[in-house]
Length: 280
Length: 321
Image (cartoon, rainbow over all chains, first blue to last red; front, side, top):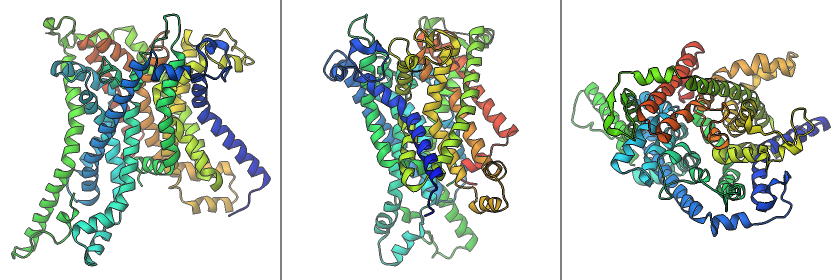
């Protein structure tokens, strides 16, 4: 490895600090806000003067409990199911695209691209009306179906790119060596495909977890309302109090798991996103 | 999923058919299996987009309010006349266009810088930098909107106190009471949240630039700036174009941050919010559908311009290049 000059070292140190501040300051600021006493919210300081967990008590046990906890359950359940369905369908489709020769491959990939740029709001109006007529309004299924329009296209793209790189000859090689076709598939292909499927699931989950337009348009109660939509309905403990602290605490609660996932899997996420987007 | 079903040689070959017929049989089997596997995903994608947009187009031709559903009647494009002659629509269109253009330009520069940082970073720093850059990507847009909103808010914010030495900023500045300052914060949060995505696309393009070319240019005495201009950028033109198109389409749909920060007040209304307020807020399905269809046409228009005029090569984005 080349040794760095002092100047280069200083330059990298400065760049690192700048990037870290840019990327993390808004996150740290909402964490700081979430620990402020409601009465000290307007001091204009960055850090809390007195650190308190009042806001967290409010969303987990206090007045905002009935708003936040069902929303958290809805968000986790709906996002997980939408991710699972998308990844299963996309795995089958991506396998066919990477492995089989058939007309219509291009059509499927182009459709996925078209769906991924579709303006969500254009889908919402007709669904809002239809869901009310057929009873899917304000239900889990009523959100899972439109979430597929978000999670499915990117899953197909990412997985197709991953699967194209798998050396499928390994499977035949294993069969030549005496493995049954199922063994060959399980022992040779699954270990190679699994990281791609996992990364895709992670990316699809982030997208479903992030949704706001569907969440706020197609739900009306805590029966199906996900967290991002619920945050917009928080109110203060009294009508003279801003819900700033409770919203910040809830925001932190739904952000921390995602940040941990990013920390653990940054390498996979980067390769998944870059391969799915531009040729791998 | 049994891959053996398509393993070469698995099709019928012992029954003495002519070679060509056997091959086409196999091709047909393979095509059929391909559609069996990819079909469900394909059908679901169409069902969740094509059907709603057709329904929206149909509804947009009627005078249709959910508050008076029995008064639904065909009015032959009257909704479009109403929408297109309403200054509110054009104001929202203009704001959306301005947000799209400014955020995409800023993100392109910032994203390229971040991509370079990730590409060149020394090994000890690479993980830290990459993780930090990914954090905004993982954060919910609504959460990012609240974080930026509270930071700039006149009551709870710290920005006015930190930056009161900047001319024009003082503790009494209410960022969300004016169009310009509101849009500034909205765009800042949008840029913060989505630059990681564009920088990853650019990073993929950057890693495709042949290293030898750059070295050769360096040997020939080209400065860093010249190498960037003459070697790196031309070689990643396709990646840049795809990144810009994706981001532009995404920015054009902006909704979450505007909803949270201003809800369209003080001249910050955008097209998505206008459509939402019309159909879901006021239950004017006919008018709301017309706005939805117009928004959809705008997206098609942007794609058309990008592909025809700027020759964005989507094949390279489709993973086929």
